[in-house]
Image (cartoon, rainbow, N blue to C red; front, side, top):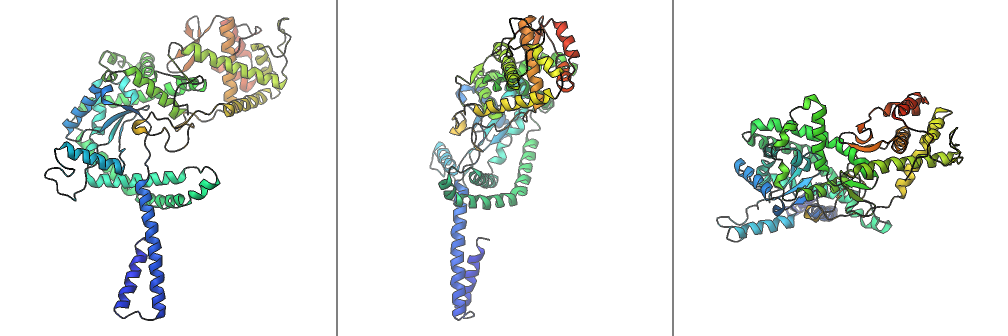
Length: 545
């Protein structure tokens, strides 16, 4: 389409040279078409330059240098040699249960890598036996490995899982496939650049040409999407076929471990890590927690029997020189990806060990929610509970009886209370300090979020909670606080379900139903029976944060 006006201009000039298009009208048409062709070619050249120079999106990862994991690099190189493909150029970790190859070369970096490769062969950039004018060889992509795999899988299982992934470096070195991928990545980068929000009216005007380029790039990307998908399916099929002879029997068992690791990782993030992130704390050993969570699952689920016996074999994390440091970096990146936390630890964003989790996260979470619940009750003018101690005639005294009596009284008190808690949570989240953005911890010096501004999470774990869900959580937190203060209970951590209430050293799992009955139906009978069985005093004040 860009060359069509130029083709028309050539036809008109050729007709004039042959004497078929003479006259002032034809002259005007020739010069008008020529001017149009020049403008279109300039615009097309500008679009092409913008696509070539566009910075493709790079997945946020934790770089893993060879000196930090020499055994892992050796395993990957041996695997690549066995498969007959180029070894990946580097290895990085992602806080997710997935592994892939990612091309992180730009045109300038690609040329530098090619020249370095030529010098490494003992010659010029063309190398011995290489004729000038041949297409350059694409640099090998980066191997991105899911960090939970390293902690849960054994070394042999990890090798079996990585075999089809590493086999993909063979097609990546093919010049035509590399060029096609660079083109698609350039279009994707141009679309992302055009979609970035403008900073002020002047910036909006300056970005108008970029938005035009983005529309053209989006059109081209939509047109080639089907062809690119077919190419990637062919590449994946070829890599899978090449890797079939590598640990084929073990790959079946390893794939089962992939599914198990994903289940444990998901439970750990949503049930254990998310409450800590909301409290301004981030667990610093999430990958080690996956092992504990899956071991607990093996103990509870008879279908998982036998998985715990694998723990006697060498774990893949032994391939790292400092597994703790890698786990901490992956844990911080997970908090940024799934919650939108800051790039570095600080006073309001501190790491927490698993030993400190019950006291510094669970207990603090309960007391913070209980305090919020009573502030809303005070705002609503809810009176103290009947039969309260004479030392407490004050409406603001936090007692469990006050909450139970208000919800049991009905008269839409629960809906009003839920709405008040939702509004309070929204206000606190809006007033929270905005973390600094643009961390430089990722491979290649890229920022965390190439698709949008920090600190919003790229992949939120849960949708926003409803008012009823918030009210249930707050009432349960108040019950747990009362149990700790008056019945000798203690906060605890369940690896699969997160914060837990321990009574006489045993986890109580039967609190949710009585609280839900009180909130939704106004029936306090089941909860009162539960409180009596545990020995909770509802009339005693509760310590709040």
